[in-house]
Length: 129
Image 1 (cartoon, helix red, strand yellow):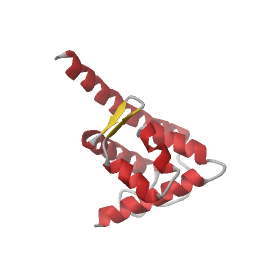
Image 2 (cartoon, one colour):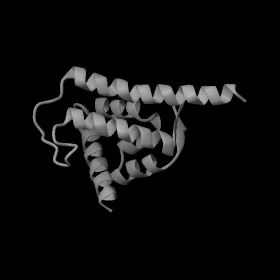
Image 3 (cartoon, rainbow, N blue to C red):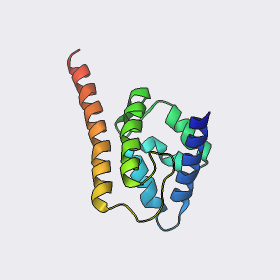
């Protein structure tokens, strides 16, 4: 149950960030770049919509969102958040100075690496048939 509450809270924060009139579009684009374009409408809606899209399998923008992708990205994103937001791994994130551009870039590259590997495995499976 604690996991569900955390997911709901994270979705609510995300909706708030996307609704920001100055940075919202960049936040939305960044989330979709890390996940799939299938999240875009949910990001601009209610928090429970984000949770529903995260739980459902879909293919969007050439990426397939399924349990395997979700689990792999969850690990990479948890590690990235831990490195970008001090105290996050312990459950008490400390807000303060923004992470460096290099740290954000490294996190984005790690996420992209997961998608590249998933896509390569998919190509290998198709080619082996």
